[in-house]
Length: 130
Length: 130
DNA sequence: TACTTTAGGGTAAGTACTTGTAAAAAAGTA
DNA sequence: TACTTTTTTACAAGTACTTACCCTAAAGTA
Image 1 (spheres, each protein chain N blue to C red):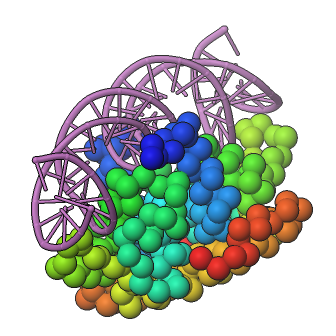
Image 2 (tube, each protein chain N blue to C red; image 1 turned 45 degrees about the vertical axis):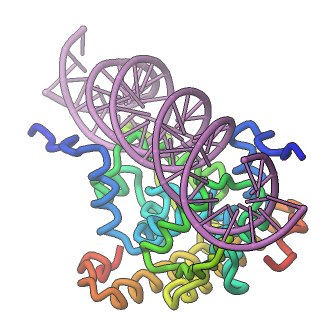
């Protein structure tokens, strides 16, 4: 009974998994390490590119723009550019992006409970609004 | 005005980001491409290692055991081993793991809405219980 | 002309994540 | 002894993700 295993192009597994599981579908869209943070900052309203950069000092410009492009392609954020010089570009959430609020809040709520459960001191930054 | 950039050991950014954002804290724990799937299958009750393997054919044994270990270390799943031969090991959710249900359901719900919004045919697999 | 600001592109290099393959341990059975 | 089953580990190799660094465009201003 020769098992029919390992007939995959490495990334095929992932794709198959995404089609299998709605949760993975979501992770594929907001699953990077930076995307949730970006979205979190956009929850409080439209932001300029430079505002986001300042709000998330740890991110590199490359990552920021790359993820913004992806989020835009996934119809989660909307890019609006004013044709002025210097350029003025704002990013905001689409309806689909707004709907993610519930997911993000559920996550945040779980995180709070988890650190309390573990008796870790809650990082005070968490308690500040984005 | 020499900018004070790039003073990071590559992964320090991530860590800083995690401390900054509860959402990232969650992503760090369930953010792999496989973890959500594993958890999804455990939502319906304790499963044996081999059951999980059969339930998620696309995953390699390496990934499965590795993620299970991580989830165990993060106190999200519980491992119970009966000292018999051949070994009998079951994995189930801890209270913290159970609490993730809300997060996973919020994700699943969003996924449904998103595919409907995009007029993609909902993968019928999504509609089957895990 | 030189310089400023804002939004982004390109490339190379490094790090983390996944996979494939092989194999170990343990107690019983043929 | 050789072989079974189930869970798990080790190692090497490949792929994807991130970072660092440098660079462009455009209009106004000194």
